[in-house]
Image 1 (cartoon, rainbow, N blue to C red):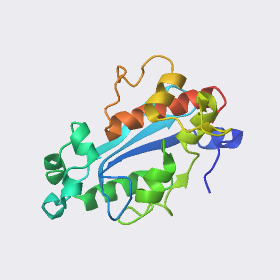
Image 2: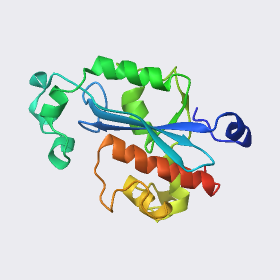
Image 3: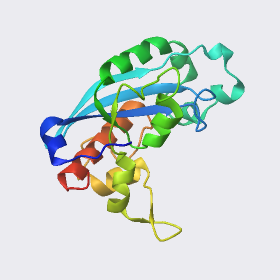
Image 4: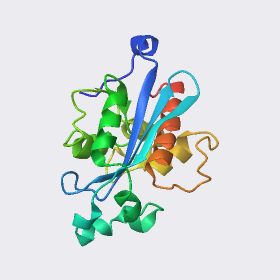
Length: 201
């Protein structure tokens, strides 16, 4: 169950950790791989967004098929398969992330994607060690109010939510989303701060 913030949470648990992943595809593990991951710490009730962790996730790309080697992330960002091949081994990154997030309040912009498709699965297995908090994308939906096909509003993209909810450009993206884990985690963190400030989270 995804935990929602309350006044008691505000007093007892002022920090939420926002995670973002970049992956080789949308199908999830084990077919697709996490290749970039970042964590920010948000102090609720303040204006603090701190980078806690950021790493490319190393894999033996020589064993990958053509689809993985030419994934969208490598064709549309500055991340390359060579960078993944030379990055810290996946097992080391998994250990670091598990240590940082153990017992912490954790969310992301698209929780069901990041966690249900990847971070709750092997080798990450974060389900039993974190305290899940409400998805930032879901919380953004009723604020952005983007027309959907039916009566309800549709979920905004990260860049849409950031431009519609956050004042100015505290994440420093200058209107262009980099689609890297750290920049996206920072954007999501500032959205969370503003949602909390306005009573929507």
